[in-house]
Amino acid sequence: MTATIIDGKQLAQKLRGDWKLRADRLNAAGIAPGLAVILVGEDPASKVYVRNKIKACREAGIRSEEHVLAADTKLEAVIALIERLNADARIHGILVQLPLPAHLPQAAVIERIAPDKDVDGLHVSNLGSLLAGHARFVPCTPAGIMAMLKTTGIDLRGKEAVVVGRSNIVGKPVALLLLQAGATVTLCHSQTRDLAHHTRRADILVCAVGKLHMIGGDMVKSGAVVIDVGMNRNAEGKLAGDVDYGAALQRAGWITPVPGGVGPMTVAMLLGNAVLSAERHAAEQGIKL
Image (cartoon, rainbow, N blue to C red; front, side, top):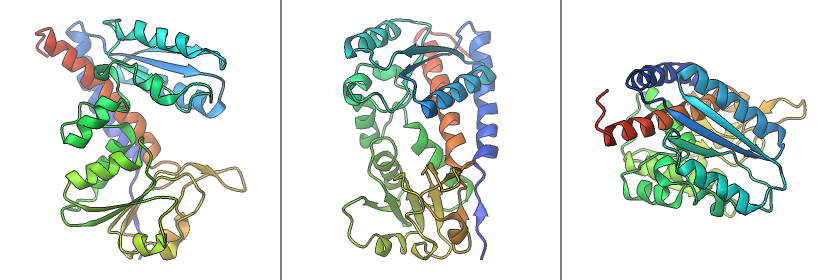
């Protein structure tokens, strides 16, 4: 068996086309969707991510602002910027690029973003809404994962889903989304005993740990859907996932590549959340699109 590759680039391109159509309608109605991105420090990977997001916004008809702060910027200054953006009616989404420098507590920063502008879906209010089953914004990577699963045509009801990784950004939210879709979900982490026991029974396996090839081919159930969120560098300096792709390719039914899998979908869903926020703003003003 050779797995079917779930092409995140192709699916993301289609979704970005959909968001552009909706952004064009907003612009025509006098509402220019606006996204502000805050980058603190000079982390090379973060700079690349921000550049890609800004470029994607421009292509989708979304106005973007980039706010770059020095690595030693104090918490009070970051919060002051966020408060200014919260009050700016031209800004419909605010994104703080993670990770932040060590002296800035992530929760304290994220929770100062107005929940209705938190397009990353990481504010405690939005995570609570997700838990309750009526999310204002679904976190971008989990939303992208669910869109990729939809392309397989598999009915998730009653399926065994195993999520490896329990972060607030990916692991916990995607576990909730899978649960809401009717799957039976097991959430594994660094203290899980006999990880392979769980992964081998997974019809749906989502790996989001950030550890190179921690999931070997023998840990994958035959015919499973494997979603690899990991972004690691191998010995040659090339991007690779949490899953041993070559080995898993021979056992899985569907699999996402790294790169070209979940990554493009995360950016696409961010654009979708920014457009959705602008549409809500238009509705509040009684503007018909």
